[in-house]
Length: 404
Image (cartoon, rainbow, N blue to C red; front, top):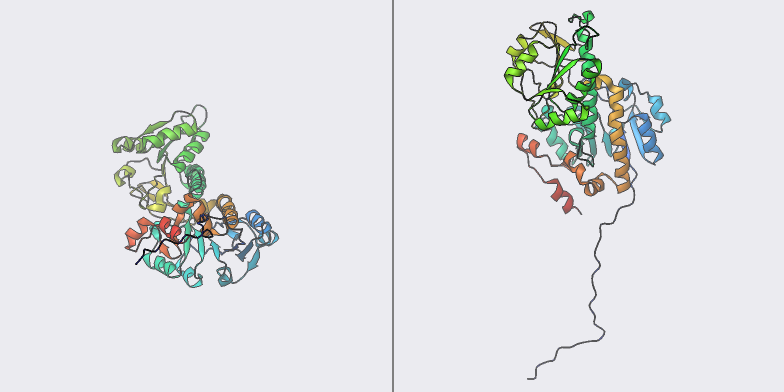
């Protein structure tokens, strides 16, 4: 049997396959909902009327609940003139595919949430409950949180602007409680010619610490800053532009400085959730009567052992004759400025998302935004939360890539 020769046809040819490129999608039209916050002491609103005006003129739809901006002195009329639709029913606002909140999602919000909704809001890890998270996962929610939202430079723009407000506000608050009218020492923060300046101790050289130091120096106070990171102390000095008295957190030095100060500010952040307690009860008991403690770290538990949460209505309590101011969410007390700060970050972000064809595409294109996502279509993508609540963790990068 003769061997068959291979058959070669001239009409048969190989062709290269085209490479499929990631085509940029055409722009999407967004529908954004802004509910009125009912969470404790939340006076901010995430988008100002000006920002809403920009979104509407770019072809997007904004639905806002009646009086949502009231606490920040933005009226319904300002929003309707900017092109937003004012509704009186909360459920109506929650029908928007993108929800923008200035307070974390709370239990009351859950029944109103839609399947597959996108929520942009703070997270407040310390107050988060596993049950709430599981209900959001069931509804296949994609959630972006303020606290870990990064920009191109790798910094946290919303945290930064809120910290700048808190830091600047701290000295205004301290000055208020040092005055005789508030049963303080009757000392002018900063002093005048011929009188030694008042002494301010700042614990933590982050953004809050830096802005508190700037405000105190501007008022003429003598400022001493403590932090365990020498790099942060160096950075603080560079940013302020001149030499400051700085020290690492050494308990004996700290106790000695606290004994003679008028104002002590706790501004230590924390990556794990709980701020470290560095000022013991004994240190506070040795402080001068009438001096003021402002614990900005109270949001994450406080760094003074004597701190207890207070409210804007009753901001202070006395312990060992020392005035303690421990109001969480200080920026909410300066709601209009804080709303502008949040809005300045979110409005460009939403415009960019629309340009990319939606939030999901934006996360694919801009890697730096991924750190802010703690839920993606119901999957938990935040490692610390999965550990804390013993829930399944999914890597966001793999999740996004698999959907391409």
